[in-house]
Length: 406
Ligand SMILES: [Zn+2]
Image (tube, rainbow, N blue to C red; front, side):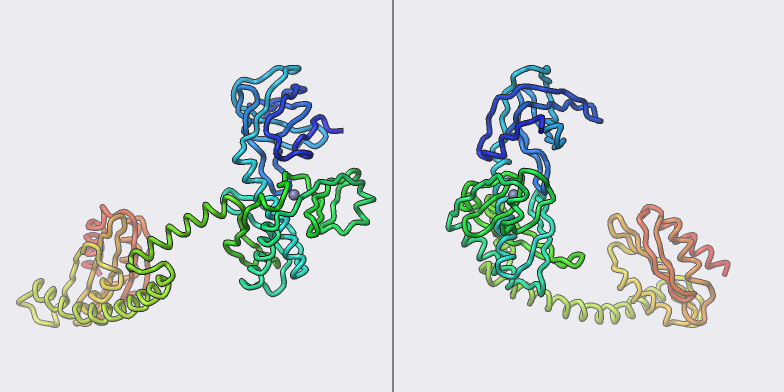
C-alpha cells in the first residue's frame, strides 16, 4: 500500500490540493524531501520528468517515486512539520507540456503499430524534443510521415481518453499494445477505438488536447529507429524558430523561403569553383613573391647561393604558406621557414630545396613544442600549428639558429 495517494492517477487536470505531511527526510545533498498522504505531483518515471510547483511557501524542485514509500517532494524553502496541513500547487505550463508530449507519444506509437506493426521499445521526454526507439523495418521519411499523418488525424478527431483499472489477470485477456511487468491492479489508458496500453503517466482527457504532432528527425540506432518528435505547444515553438531561421536565410538571397535551398546550393557550388581558381592563382602569385623575397634578401648573390628565408605573415592560410614555401624551395639552396598569425592560432611551414641541408621535420617538432602545438612531415617539408601565438617569432628564430648549425 503506497504511503501517498496519487491524485494524478484519477485526474491529470488537478493542479491544487491539500494534504498532510506524513514524513520528512534529508537527501544526500542536504535538501529536504516531504512525503504527503496524497499528492497531485507526478514523480519522474516512464520516460516523463517530474512536476514542479509549490508546497506551502516552499518550491518543489524534484519529485521522486519511492514506490511503496510514496512520493518524495524535494523542496527549497521553508520545510513544514510532520502532521502539518499543506497546500500544493503544480506548475500548470510544465504539466500541460508533459501531458501533451506523453499523450502524443501514446498516439504516435499506436499509429506506428497500426500501420507498420512497429512497436516502441523506449521513450524519453527531453527538454526540447522527445525520442522513441521503434522496431521499424525499412525506415524512410515517407513511412514515418504516414504515421505522423495518422497520429494527427486521431488528434483532430478529439477522441476521448479513458483510464481503466483492471487486474493483471483481466488485462492479460485484453489487446494491449504493450505488456506490463506489474502485478495486481493495472492502470490502462484507452484512446477510443485506437489504443489500449498500461501506463502510470499523466494523460489528456481527449486526443484533441495534444494539438499536433511533428517529427523533427530520425536515425538508425542500435538496430532500432530513433524518432525525434514533439507535440502540442512545442510544435508551435519549434515552427517559430525554424521559420525565423528559414526567413533569415531567404533574406540573404532576397528570395522566398522555398527558393533558398536551391540558391544556397548554387552558392556553395560557385564557392567551390572559386576556391579552386583562387588556389591556382595563389600558386602563380607565390612564384612571383618568391622571386621578390629572394631578390630582397641577397640582391648581389647568385641564384645558387644558399639562403634562409624567415618570414611571418598575418592571416595567411596554410595552403598559401605551403605554396610560397614550395615556390621558394624550387630555387637551389633555399630554406624557407614561414609562419602566420591568425588571431589565436599560429601556423608554420618549413621547407628546403632538394640540395639544401637540414631536417625540416626535426625543426618543426622543436618549433611546435615552443608554440604549444603539433606538427610534422619529412626532412624536406613539414607543417604545424599551435596556440601560443606570442612566441611565434622566437620559435622561428630558434629554428633559424638550428638550421644555421645544420
Ligand atoms: Zn502514458
